[in-house]
Amino acid sequence: MSKSGGQLAADQNTFTGFDAESVRADFPVLNQQVHGKPLVYLDSAASSQKPLHVINAVSRYYENDHSNVHRGVHSLSARATFAYERARGKAHVFLNSKNIREIIYVRGTTEAINLVAQTYGRANVGEGDEILISEMEHHSNIVPWQMLCEWTGAKLVVAPIDERGQLDMTAFAEKLSERTKIVGIVHVSNALGTVNPVAEITKMAHDAGAVVVVDGAQAAPHLRVDVQEIGCDFYAFSGHKAYAPTGIGILYGREELLEAMPPWQGGGEMILSVSFDSTTYNELPYKFEAGTPNIAGAIGLGEAIDYMGRFNHEALERHEHDLVAYGYDALATVPGLTIVGTAEGKVGVHSFTLDGIHAHDIGTILDNEGIAVRTGHHCAQPVMHHFGVPATARASFGIYNTRDDIDRLVEGLGQVRKLMG
Ligand code: C6P
Image (cartoon, rainbow, N blue to C red; front, side, top):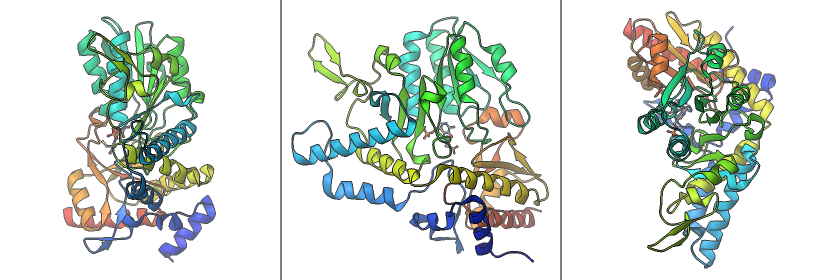
């Protein structure tokens, strides 16, 4: 006899010690119908939904405290500055950086990597040098390095992945050399869910004399990140994938590297004094934060970090691994479905194809069933190329997803098969 959704959720909670059903109540957006069906949101890798805690914190800030930061002596400016800097402190603890000066506010992962490429990269990479990345990178960790290569005459080198979507560590080691100046590596692949051994990669890169930039966009919402334990030189993530607002993210950089780097954008905030003859730059982290920042976004990010911190991380990880394991079994029942990316211990996503049916048709029919998945190349075209597919459909999980959501996905895929033959 098949179990009801409520019974399945109860089984899942007993198994994982994590009550996703009650977490769902924190996310008002989930409580709606799309095309007359209860919404199933399986697109958190593109952007997660926001808990009331974050929504209310941003709203409270605008209702009571808004002013510009670091600029006024009046009370509102002092309150805004306090809240903005307190949020930086939360990011510092979240990443376990050595010093709060190493935490730079940016718009997101894309901006963070571009900042490193255009400051550290331009200052330290020259003709004949190499930048080593992997075949599973998001475009944000490919294109900024290609641009740096164009400016400097350096060469982009790519380490391949295997048929499960795992980094070929032997090939990676072979491609590292004294010419490698920067290693850019994704912590968790957005298209495959693969978790890379970033501490081991960092150690290998450092032994070869290269600095390491980790793209943590998909890791921050799922894994415990400790930049000192990883040992990397730069680590980037976006708030909006980790339950915070859009337009805010963090670049962690090792203090001695940040100190030595030239600033990026020029303007207010990043200076100590300006005259027409000369300008002196501000201290860290403000040297890299020109212009009025996303104050409300930063406050929302701090609240999202607090929100994630309320949960027992082991239970949360068990819940997420349960969703992946349950998804493997459930999706295996769909005729003609192939999962793209089966790395050991993967997190957060199931990318898949359905024989003879284009991913966009899958996405459109699922949307009609109230189910949100992402379809396309996921800004990881080299991954699609590796697997010989133009696109995949991707179901990605957040803290609020349950086995019920996966059951609805499987039902929806039944409808896709029915309509598309
Ligand atoms: N991936 C996805 O649907 P931004 O846009 O700057 O917040 O993040 C860019 C980025 C960088 N690296 C990885 C691994 C990512 O997954 C992303 C964003 C989204 O998979 C949108 S393309």
